[in-house]
Structures are given as structure tokens and as C-alpha cells.
Image: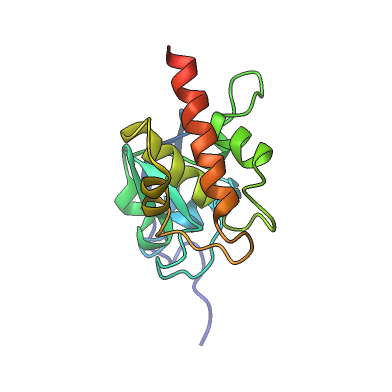
Length: 169
């Protein structure tokens, strides 16, 4: 069996805004959004772990909601607004409070789960700016981490919540 050439493949043109930058890209209809981000747009901060939506490593924010990018086809993201971990830092390179929290509170070890954890935390804190530790644990419960034991991650999100509240006061 021979591999299809680019001319033989059916491609769909999609347009999406990622981290406030507009992109138009041709993708195969079966290409996952995680692969569009990583392979087509070269935004490799979104990690792919299980490819079944179980681990949460590929979590991004799409149209204001956290989603597992390995469960979404790229064509389903047409006209979507997406935020990835690369979009967290400020205009002058300053860390987002969630990034700062992960750094200061030792919320990571190997770092593989970190982008998904951060995006989940950002979305959660938008909805709940003053969470309890139990609410934080519940919010991140869909993201798996094999290294930290989660305590540093909970501390990091708690730190970020406080920082974000202080910035809006």
C-alpha cells in the first residue's frame, strides 16, 4: 500500500485564534486539535499523554472552557478561540500567577502534566477566584500527575488565586 500524496489527501481549511493570534491552516479532517497545535502551529507546550482524554496533559482552553485537545478534531475548532500554555505569560514576559505559583510552590517535577494542570487551573480560577483547598483538589482531579503527589500543585493554585485576587483589588 502506498502513502497518499498531499494532492490525494482531502484537506479542510480551518481558521482559529490561538493566544490572540489568528491562524489559517489546512488539515486532514481526522487530525486532532492537539496535533494541529503541535505539528502545524508549532506550539509544543500542549503535551500529549494518553491520547484518550484520561490524563489531562493536553488540556487547553477553547472558547472559554477547558477541553482535552486530544479528543477534539482540528476541524471542530474552526473559528474557535484557543488559549494554550504559551499564551499565559504577560506582554513583557512576566509569569502568569499560575506559572508563578507552580514555580514558587514547587508544583512540578518532571513537568509533563504541568501545561494541562496550568490551563485547568486558569479556567477554574476564572470561575472561582477564592477556592478552598478541597475545591482546588476537585478542579484538578481530572489531571493526572505521577511525580508530585499533588500537594505542591494545590499549593500553587492556592497561591495563584491569592495573587490574582490581589491584582484585581
